Image 1: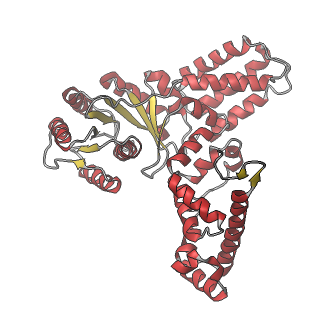
Image 2: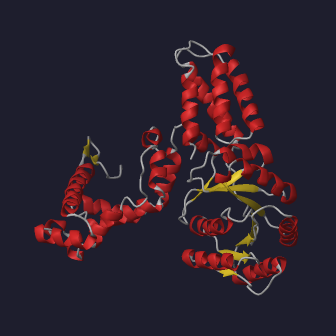
Image 3: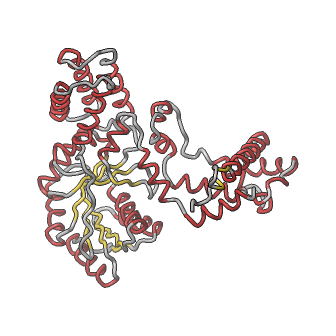
Length: 442
């Protein structure tokens, strides 16, 4: 996401390198290039023009400090304007009522059903809520089944009435069920169409009028670019929704929707979908997205994802094992699973400042750990706990069982031993007057 835009903006800033100060003459070419980069990213023309005009006004009004180069100052101004363009502040979801009612809207294929499941899982796991998913698409039996499968997968109940063809009645009955069962959030997955039509709009407007939702979220496929913005405007004119959800931001999207939609409909982007896994949902932070667009990474989000998978008790247990040089392949496998839960590997790496550009042309397989896991799973429980006993004949058996070469098994064992030694050194390293590196300070 945004790779092409990031590259183009980077080249635009380079036009100011070597300049002693920002002037109307030398900034003109830079802004022209920035505007073209935004248009190529499928940003709305009026939004792109307003954006560059605002950047120009702020840039020409700045006195460049001796310690700051004009190109650096321009990056700062563009960063601030990008953040403002995407909403400035992070917008939270409204969950004040009990039950809180969330109505999902959008075209067919935008990812409403999958996102409904992701949102339910996030509210359940991170906010301690007890959500109820409602299958209110009366036209596609497959959508009802899909929601049931997702609900079972994430441990969230799904309300459906397959024989009932009245979506308003289904939604009302679901809310009654939620109150009886103690569910505190009701997420209503509505029907979509391949294109906007009057019947669809009347139907979802009737559902909204009947259930009076706390939140109406408009779900849009970010890969549709400028069409997503036009669709959002039409939905907002009829529904007056509270927030936007951008799905498929991990795909080959130019990012125009994320940059334009806030300005056109004047409603915040609240969530983004970043992959197919049920964990692949993030609150939308305009400042962090601006960081990523400008190649600055997003270390805050990376740390947050790591903390979500962090188990303090497990960390203490591992620390003791590492200190005694008892870290084994069972522990190694556990750490791999935690990393995988954090999300797409290339997406994670791109959050590290400076790494995004370095790996943009690399094809990082999301199954990069597949062969390592296969090798470990081909070991016996005794071998995983005590890798030192894995001799030549055992290595050959493990390679055959995992469908890999003996050389791959040898390489993993060597890397594992080196990692174990390094971890032990870090754990037992001394800080003058403070004891061990990992020990708590008194």
